[in-house]
Image 1 (cartoon, rainbow, N blue to C red):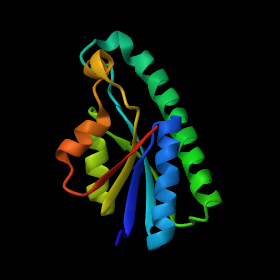
Image 2 (cartoon, helix red, strand yellow; image 1 turned 90 degrees about the vertical axis):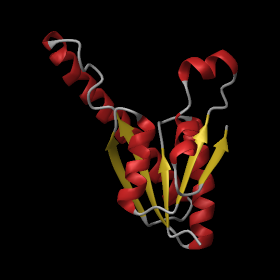
Image 3 (cartoon, rainbow, N blue to C red; image 1 turned 180 degrees about the vertical axis):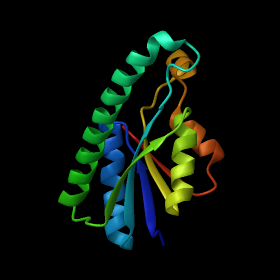
Image 4 (cartoon, helix red, strand yellow; image 1 turned 30 degrees about the vertical axis):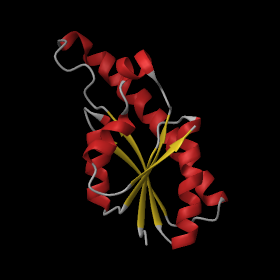
Length: 146
């Protein structure tokens, strides 16, 4: 039923819950799994040349964070018996756009992602990457709550 499952991760325990759920589906259907971490490559756009050094430090830190999250997800999948795992660092000024682009690029037919379950003002202020993915995805999205 599902041949390629995309799992966007952010290093949170909620993302690891999504990894666990996706592992069960991948075992059941013999699916390939792509684990994705999306980085905003230009968070300092428009603030001037004085922040070029800061951007370099940001990209170094973001790469380290991405690699740690991807390694943890891959380890969890391998421990669950899933060997067909690809890890990918994507880019996107808007994280949900990076997820949708990656899903198309790798030919995913399912996205499994976590939701932090924020409500009220916190949800309004912080937004929801998961909600945005749900709003624009043309493939099924399985949302795993923490």
